[in-house]
Length: 574
Image 1 (cartoon, helix red, strand yellow):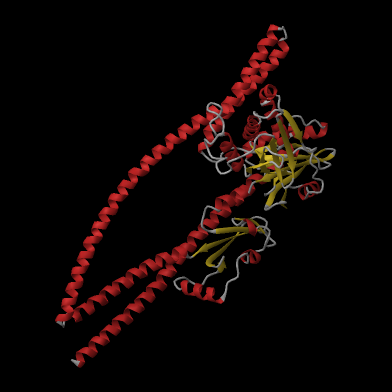
Image 2 (cartoon, helix red, strand yellow; image 1 turned 90 degrees about the vertical axis):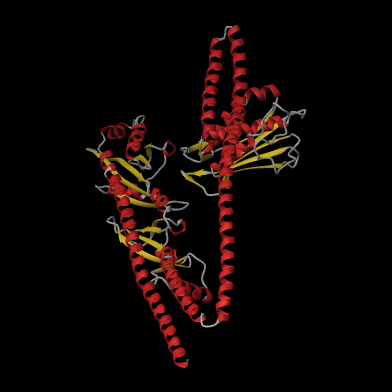
């Protein structure tokens, strides 16, 4: 018995030793193979990203050379007649796909640009103008932005027989690659010949070196490093640590001005694959070991009885588990039916909300059209056709506005997709007041305006901004119905943000919690559906701003619309 017991123990020891060696060898070989596969995929993505970047740069590099030879642009600089130059550049930018194109005179002044807001800007000290005038070739420039990131431009001087006439500048949109790269799990950055990061999926890396960028994380303690070393036992030695996690670093040279592209890939997928195989192996060895102990347990009746009881319990547990699985499957089917019903209900609710929104937003233009038609009929009866034509012109503008409102309301179901442009809030406010002119005249509301001397610009959709202003003005007018001398004060201020305040001397706000909720209204039936502030809040949020409300110190309500201000073509961060 002793000899048999000693042999059994030796066999079990050798079995465990063989299992440990097998698991160790499997871990090593699978880690190497999966790491190599991940590295190959990362290298392929890096080559693809590099090729796309170089292709974009080379495609735009030839544009300044072609535009510098355009006879219409040369003639415009010679004659100082730039009436058609901007339109010609706009036609080019749509075909080329560049971010913007602008033409500078020999004194550095912008005389034509695809962005009309840049007309008249001086660039005599800009590198892309100075280098282009001094060189007889196309000049590439990397210009730091005031907020974050860089601008990338190609420029070339325009000459004739008399000498230098000016320069043409083409701005390349490379930040679209950052947005595309950000959709992948890898972190990607592009550095120039000096090692400065000019493009990166992490915005805070721009302008730093790689060493400084990787240090943008919380320092780790000794315990955290020990835990991390324990969890990384299935991976090869890491190339770097990014935000406390081991990553694989790959670098590729870009054939353009000494630029280099670097990517950081995590080992998470490698760990998952290796651990899955190791778990299966460990489970297999555990099952074999369990069978060995089961065979030994058969030597005694007591162990046999215990095993039979355990088997009976396992059968009961298995039966219970099967019942639970069947019950869960039935619950899953019921959940799918409920989800389908909920989706149908959501569609019907959205349809009802859209119908109410259309009714709410078209009510104001329809009321204004009725007023203008009555005025035009009276003017025609008085033989004043010229003034009547002006009323018809306003009616035509209102019809166009109604069409824009319906198109805008159709787009509420989807986010984004609209092209934003610089909007002068002063002009938008004037247009909104013109829209509200019939109601103001009927109610005899006193309007006070405080506007800054300089124009205040934001980036957005003028139609949607005017829609918010009209809703705020209409709410202010409705709030002063019970006041003897109704007053509405409008204040436009420019600071870190562009702020439009609309104050009234009404009764004020009583329910802040539900103020911006859809279909919440304090008006009588038939006077409104409670969508104005909800729609306005959604529009302002889409534009990167916020809409707030409070009660004034002297009574009444104050609504403030804050939007990111546009300074020299750059949208300030709030």
